[in-house]
Length: 445
Image (cartoon, rainbow, N blue to C red):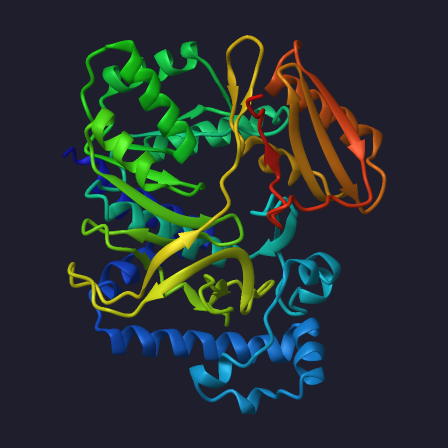
């Protein structure tokens, strides 16, 4: 291993924090220590952080003051984790309808963010820079469980920005990626030419770590298997942003010849949990995130509830993230006492086919739709090889600029041979299964 990872973590990041008044390095150092704590130490730390968050939410977040008062709950009533579990849950609809009331009245300088959501309902929210430092520190620690070191070269099969960024922002992103030693390839639209480019990059640069959407990694592995080309494997592979099935994991490990580490996160919180080398569930970043599950019907997987312990600007408290899963209280063979999620039942996104043989990654659509505040819900359905219908439930009409941008980006993804039809609808009915998938690919006849 080169000297650079040491310089990055012990010189460059601390210098940046000092110049910009940030806390990434301090939180990263804490997380490196705390992953060796006992279960009781972790629980004590969580309760201390949660208590501070609740003090803040009751005093400074108008929506929680009203909501909890209507439920007959006062701050003094919450004296234990059991008491906390009685607080009402927070849903996506509440965030959409009461976003400004969920902002703390004493925290300036909030950064707007958005996510497409796992059910096609964009969620728009705010975070603080301090919360962002916690998130990045937790993500870097979780990636380190793969055996790769922060600062080693990482090849990332991911998405790209929407629209055209200002030149200064392009330079800023390029500089950040260079310092972090990250090479990002946009895999929203996939083709043999793209995978050959990825292969050439990987063989020339030899990155120890390969990161990507589960579907992008899977499609690259399929192309590589068909190509018959030789392959020098990375040290580890990290699957992110999409559910990783057992079949896909086995395929990746067989073709790419490296251990695969599953992760669980969201745009609301970034890294929530990740696998250790034992691959027996995912360890929660419990110093930053509190995970609970809601009661469910017998035999059904319960809803996952997330509390962000450090986003004081717009606290998420017992938030229904839209996924279901099962927690695991048993000790992990790795010796780490961080709590684990045994399984996550996320929503799988269909791919879209293009007449020219290229593929459009399903996660492209939520990545795009989060940019438009008018979109309440959406669904993209491919009805023919050259025809895609995007149904939109709008809170208000799309502005001319937003409609032009949406059409331009959809045309960029699907190409000139595909008609992309935008339809404004009042509602998107569920399928016979009761689900409302946000992407429905072309079904065989």
